[in-house]
Amino acid sequence: MTGRARSYNTEGVILRRRNLGEADSIFTVFSAREGKFDAIARGVRKPRSHMRGHLEPLTRSQLHLAQGRNLDVFTQAETIAAYRAVRDDLDRLALALYCCELVDRFTVERAPQPLLYDLLNELLEGLDSDAPLTIGRAFELRILSLSGFEIQLSACALCGSRIPEGDTLFSAMAGGLVCDPCRPKAETGRLLSVRAIKVLRFARSATIGQFAGLRLDEALEREVQRALADAIRQVLDRETNAGRYVDSLARPLRDTGRTAAGDVQWSPPSGS
Ligand SMILES: [Zn+2]
Image 1: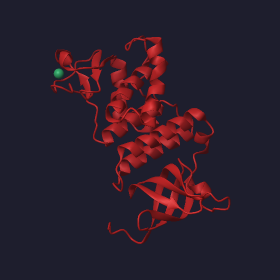
Image 2: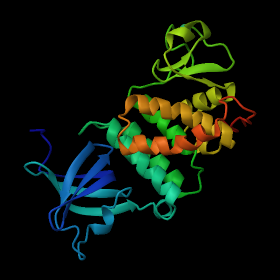
Image 3: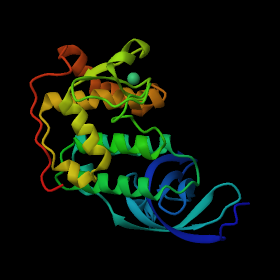
């Protein structure tokens, strides 16, 4: 056994729900203290369930649980943040659910990841206020590094030598930027502009709120998005919903045939 108490309280974000039987549901929770876990809510699909509204996916709730033989059982749930503005906007909702799926895919059960928990809540709070959807890119970069898949942005991912300033090959397979002499050794990749590299480096150290203040024009955003989509795809199985979401974002890019390094504006972040 795990040595957990027979009943316990924890705060968490509901990542997803699947229904069980007539009226029960199993919820996947991501909690700061417990990590990711599944628990069952009995009777939650009955109209009169008092927990019903507090266990919707994306909701951040205070949860009371009793340890069960297989799955723990919710005994009480109270909403801390419902993120209503996210639910009212399809693009925000899609991005939030995608980020929840990334959390689900990048974590293992009962392994606390407080920094990732804070990051998810920063993202949801940003999406719930008027932060631009580009904060999803900062989330992608940070979840990769918090999960041990740090993208090499300072030194060559293959030989470790310093990367001179300029357009540089980005290879998800190699793990980041690749210096010119190493290019033949990188099997795949795309050329990234200096500005896109600066955005990625900024995302590595900035909070979601600071990244929200960065103005990216469409071409630059797509360049960053494609590089991160490569990196996420490299780690995740393409057939997941997250993979499909990444693909749906990337599709219009392939059709336009836009070059990676275009005429793009990069505004340095203020006050950082
Ligand atoms: Zn190299």
